Length: 481
Image 1 (tube, rainbow, N blue to C red):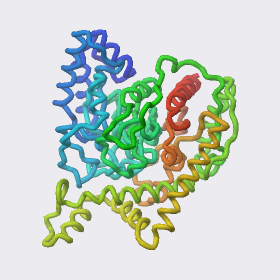
Image 2 (image 1 turned 180 degrees about the vertical axis):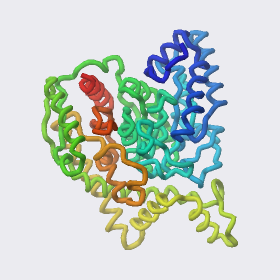
Image 3 (image 1 turned 90 degrees about the vertical axis):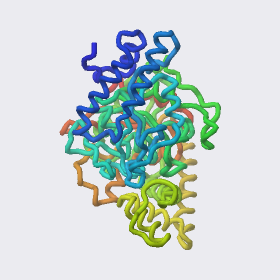
Image 4 (image 1 turned 120 degrees about the horizontal axis):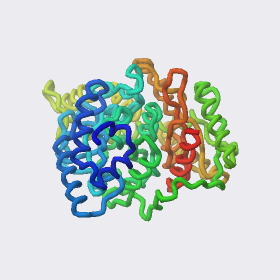
């Protein structure tokens, strides 16, 4: 029975554990062995949480013997991104600044995972402080794409994606600020979802840009992702942005067809922005949706380059503020090359942060500085509201927006590392959902001429996560036909 578990869905593994055909301890050991075997190649995991996992597994086995109710994902191993606090474990954010930092408390999502019987087997590698689209910016080394180790896995949650794609774990959590769950999921052929902002608690997630950050799942199929979203959703008084009375996700009718759903296609997003193979594959799935009886309409939404510019001004401004706490005084890295306080600040931040993080801090500080605040930050802030208003009007005409996940498939290492603007362009289809707080999901629908996966993205109204998931489940079935 302990063979090829990595080929099963998370639901199938959960069923084996609940029906006592396998113990949670056996399953946990199996996947930790796979991490030991595969991680030296892909570098997806920074810390293997061996002791934590073994304790959790024993607790799950005990509850199952006692007949206690557990979720359909009970007994399933999961990795979490290394910017999510796990008490007693290293939480580094992929940075030298926090290389030895041990969490003193659990994030709310960690508490919810434990309560549902999932077992955390590792902390996933990531772009430093979640700033990157390729996972080439980690202090702990780059993560390789399991589908082609010469290519990037996407970022910033590249370790989470690589762990699932390589079979080191059936499930993973990442964080999505611009597209850091969705982009690596697309590059690695997975399902990745950014929930409505406020659906999932951010308590215990180390902040990059607080008005954008959101925790989301990665899985091999839509149903597994939906079950994980359901587990981690909920109001949390410890998070001031958490939404009360969140609409439920109805997993039981996920396979039903909702033929009155109207799909909107932003044709302005297609064309020169994307590779021709991605455009053809996206148009093909849109044709299949229409042939299945759904209504397809063309919709106008804000220009993608405008969204990209607004996002990078606002997110970097927030990062400048959030990362000011890392100064070497209370925790984290401290330079030993300083004789006075000002030198200690400067040397600590100069040595502790990587080049991409320093670049974004400088951009954000500039946008917030006297004389430029109105020109950049205030203008971007007002543009964000205009974009949200325009998207809200668009949803008066359609229920779901369908568009590509990325302008290209996974690219080679070093191809864009010294071209920041080219790197930022990889997020061009991701930022709309981030700016509006809308739910969005990516799922694989094909591959390019080299065999690398192509993803399509669905976006819905705020709090309409249930419909986004159901739409994705139907597209998943169409893509298999």
